[in-house]
Length: 411
Ligand code: FAD
Image (cartoon, rainbow, N blue to C red; front, side, top):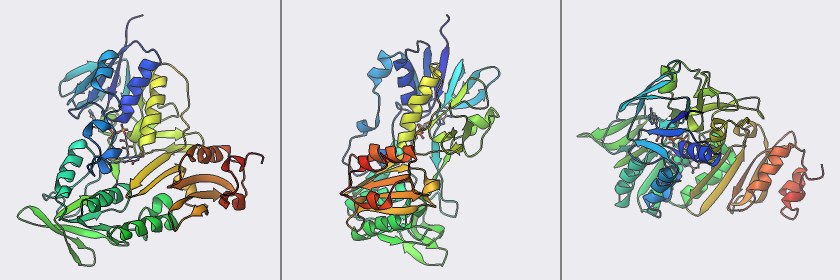
C-alpha cells in the first residue's frame, strides 16, 4: 500500500503526543508537523511556574527532543504557519508552500485574550502563552523592585503573582468575582487561594473591573478601575482567559462553536480532518454534550488518543478533566466536571484552613469533582469515585479515618 501523509498543525503538547502515539501504534505513513513557533512542540505549565520563577531551564518544556523526531522520521517544520485549509482538494497552504495530506489533525491550541480597553498595546503590558512571553516576563520580574498589577485572578494570574512575589516585587491582583477562581473551584476554595496570596503579601482585590491601562511615552504607568481609582504599575500582566485558534477551521468551513466541533473520536465535520487539545470542542459521552478543555492533561491524553484514532483505532474519548497548579508551597490537583461541581455540595476531608485536604463535590450523593490540596497520591482514587457514580456517605467521605478505597466500594 502506498505511504500516505498525515499532517499535524500545531506546536504544543497535543501535537507532540499525537505523533508519538501514531508511531507507537506502528503508523508507517509520512508524518509532517507544521508548527508556527520556531521551536519543537512544547508544553506550557512551566511558563507560569518553574521556568518563570527561575527554577527550571527552558529545556524542561519539551516532551520529545530533536533526536526523537529524527529517529522516528517525523518531519517538524518549525516557524511555518498554516494559512488555508482545503478539505476537498486535501491541501494545506502554509507560508512556506503547499502540502497535500491524506489525514490532517488540527492542534492549533488557543491564544490569550488581550485586554480590550485603552492601553493594551503599551510597553510593559504582558500576555503569557509562549516561551518568549515567559522569558520576557521573567526578565522584567527578576529585578524584584517592580510594581506589578495582574489583571485576572484565575490560574495564570495567580501563578504569575506567586512568581512575581518570589522575586520580591510588589504585586496587586485584580479579579471580577467575589473570590479568585470562584468559577473554577467555588467560593470556599477560592477564598482559600485568596488567603494564601494575601499571606504572601499580594494586594488581592475582588469585584473590581479595569477600564483602562495608562501610560506615559508609550510605557505603562498604571491601571484605572471602573470606579476611577488609579493603581500605579511598572508592569501589567493580563490573564483573562484564552480563545481557541479556529482560523484554519473557519477558512475550511468546518463546524466551529467555541472551538472546532468534533465527535467523541475527534472527527470534525470534514472527512479526514481531526481536532484535539485546547482548540477542540469534543463530544463528551459522560456529560452527553460537547466539552472544550484547556488543561495540560487534556492536551496529553487527547493527543495520545487522537494519535490512536489516526492509526485506525475506534475509540471514544471520555477522560475526566484534570488540572493541577503550584503556587508558593501549595500544590493541588483537581479532577472532575466543573459544570456539575458548581451545583454540588462541598465535603472536606482534612483541614481546609491549614490547606491540607481533599475537597469533594457531591451532587445527589455522588462525587462529581475532587480537589486534593497538599495531599498526594489520591488522584486515582478521586477519579475512581467520580467514574463509579456510586452514591457515597458524606460522613465517611469527610472522615480521614475511613480509607478512600473503602468508600463507595460496596454500595
Ligand atoms: P497549544 O499549547 O496552544 O499549542 C498550539 C500550537 O499551535 C502553538 O504552538 C501555536 O503556535 C501553533 N499554531 C496555532 N495556529 C497555527 C497555524 N495556523 N500554523 C502552525 N501552527 C499553529 N494546564 C494545566 O492543566 N495545568 C497548568 O498548570 C497549566 N499551566 C499553564 C500555564 C500557561 C502559561 C499556559 C499558557 C497554559 C497552561 N495550562 C495549564 C494549559 C495548557 O498548557 C494547555 O491546555 C495546553 O498548552 C494545550 O496544548 P495544545 O497543544 O492543545 O495547544
